[in-house]
Structure formats: structure tokens, C-alpha cells
Length: 364
Image (cartoon, rainbow, N blue to C red; front, side, top):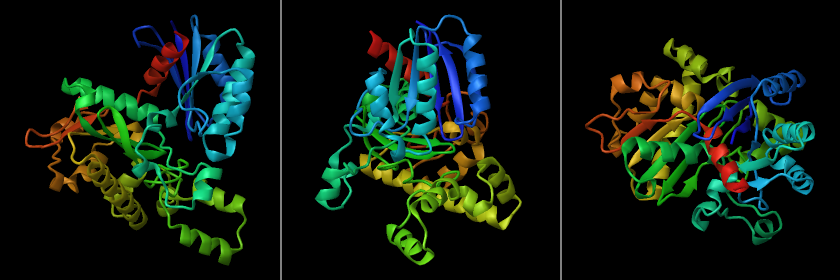
């Protein structure tokens, strides 16, 4: 079975054709998920592929309704559109592609695969916000968690690299890209994560603010006379690394920070502070740590980012091997020192494989 996977993120669309053995038959990465030209390029890519038996779509937010992958029908599509505003950077462009491809290829089954599924059984202690019962009941306010497809694949691959059962390990997975989140996993289950009700909470991201005092937000709205659209635009598109350094590109920020450019130095220090604090917090949620995983565009591509993150975590017994770390930008690899109490791995982000596996399970 050849499965076309569509991963519409906040900054790009990644498309892959995955064969029976999870081999990558063809792949392409396109910019701007909601761009008309991108849609043309996507169709051209698909038309050039061999037989497609099914299509798997990454949908970031499944809300309360969708807790597992589901075959997309007209009714399901309508329900997915009801989740538009809960993840405004992700769900709208992803669902636009769903609508387009379901219309162009109605005979090919399409399956929606949700980032939130991985966190469905997260403990109440980790998922519950201390807000009034009315909000929790009426709006189903709780921490959903995101990047679940990436975290699930990374953990399974890291366990494979170590030659140990996934279920026997306590892992912290760091998905670091334009969006970024951490997940704590034990006994094969997610126990904690940094993102919340939406993908806005948690780590500092490319253009997203991450965790931010709601009291400060209320103060700014009140004294700045801002409407909700302006606030949303600022928190989603004008915050994060972009706000601190003037660019959202972490690679560029690291380069400028190494040259002591003040804004870049501040941005990188804030980013690393939040990252290290988050990793330590996730380890505390697990009651200890066996494996630390770096994945996502920045997590897998930047040896310096991994080095700087781990340098502040030596109190946990986390020690990188500098030589292994330097050569782990394009391969799945264990990069911890022999002196490290914790295994450190770099895993290539392969949501496409995770999506393909989910599609097979649903259709079979």
C-alpha cells in the first residue's frame, strides 16, 4: 500500500509517498501552506507519483471529538472545520488541503491523523488547568498537547537505537522547529507536555510567544485598547524569536549570537533558559530520566543548540559526546558520552512514517 502523507505545519507543507516497508518513494517540502502557488506545486507533485492507495493528513488539533485517526467523510470534514479557531496557524491550511484533495481524488480514502491523539490519556494532574469548573465543562479547557506524531515516532526510534523496549524507558522528547514542545513519556504513555489547550503555550518558538502571564495579557489589552484579532496576530505571528531577535530563524540567531549581537544573544539565552527548564520539569514528571531526544528541524540540525541545551543539564548527569554530536545532523544517532547517566539521541523528524502507520491501522 502506497500512502501519500500530507504534513501541513505552521511554516511549510511536507509531502511524502511511503511504501509498504516505510520506504520513502518520493518527497517534497513546500512553503506557505495557504499559498495558491503552493497548492499548484502540490498537485503537480501528486500527479507525478506512482499509484496512491490512501492519503494521510496531519491535523494538529483534534479537540474533544477526535481522539484517534479517522477516515474523512463529508460529515467528518464538517466537524473538522468546527475546530478552525482552536489552532489558527495550523488547522485552517491543513483542512484547506483536505478539502482540495478529497475533491480532486474522491476514490482515494483519506485519513485524518491528529497530533493530540498521543496525549489523550495524559494524567489529570498534568492536563488540568486550575480554572473554574464552568470553563472546564463548557469549553473543555485542558492541556491537549501537540506534536504528538513527532514525539511518538522519535520515542520509538530512540528505543530502537538503544535496543530496548519503548515501554521500559523514561524519555523526554524535544521537538524543536518553528513550533517547539517537550513531552515526557513512560510505560509507553505521555505523562506531561509543554503545549496546552492550543499550540501557543510552552517553549519560546519562532513567532509564537510560548507561556506568558495571562495577567500581563489582560493588562496590555486593557491599557492598549487592543481587539482580539490584534492580540492573536501579535501572540501567534509577531512574538517568540522574531520579537526578540528581529528574525525567526534560529540558525541565523545562533550565528549572530556567536558574534555577540545583543538582540541575538538575548533571544538565544531566553530560548535556552525555557528549554532547559522545560527538560528538567519533564524529567521531574517522570521521576527520573533514561533518554533525552532531540528532533524537529532545529533539534536535529544544530549541534550547537544540543550542546548549549545539555551544558546546563549536567546536574542531571546529561553529558554529550562532542564528536558524535557534531556528526548527527542527518542521521538517527546516539550522541551521549560514555560518562553520561542519560542516553542522548538525535532522531530525524518522520511524522510521515507515523502517519502512514496510522493510516494502515485505520484502513485495515
